[in-house]
Image (cartoon, rainbow, N blue to C red; front, side, top):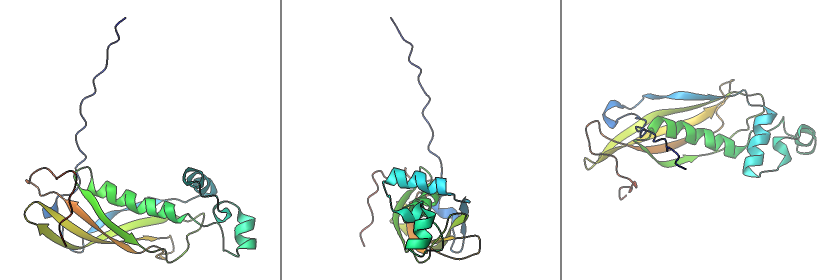
Length: 171
């Protein structure tokens, strides 16, 4: 018996931005998530094995813990930030550093906007560029809950292929 093996064509890397096209103040396209439901939180809680009732049991969250509603998981908000950065950098860039703080609660029913803005750029020895970003998560009322920052390494337009694995520059 002979089975034909279907050969898939190689997938071209999804090109992200190139370093030369970026400038301070430039906005990254916003990622929108929501409105988030109890089902979203329950599925995320199950995947992360985070069974704290504040994410799925409304009487517990509002009665026992005196919260205003069911809280969106911090790890889910973290994932949204990384999704925005990874998607923006594309397959040709590298998400190097990310930091953020959980400063306010987000609740079931909210739609979250994950945003980023270029705050700085610098070339590293002609090998690639580093792009600094401010970032955060804002709800529909404009309340910022998760401010942060990131550094993304990006290739030059006509430069060599981006190094893999990425070796960070020395401080």
